[in-house]
Image (cartoon, rainbow, N blue to C red):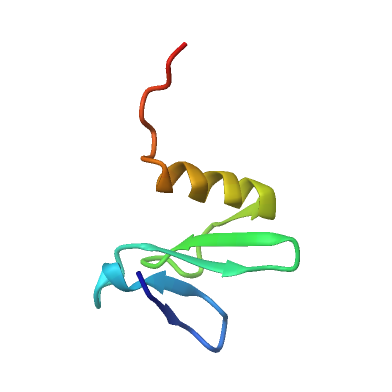
Length: 70
């Protein structure tokens, strides 16, 4: 996966999203990662610490929300 960059704001989105605006965009901050909806760039921005973002991306790479044994 590659990312396209927005030099003005540092927002990136996956190349998998194509030319549409139906995806999440991310950018790094001084303390972690910010996420927004590309359809509403002036709307709510979710922020995560670096460790929260790492846990999220590791979970996705490992198969997402697969049921875990109890």
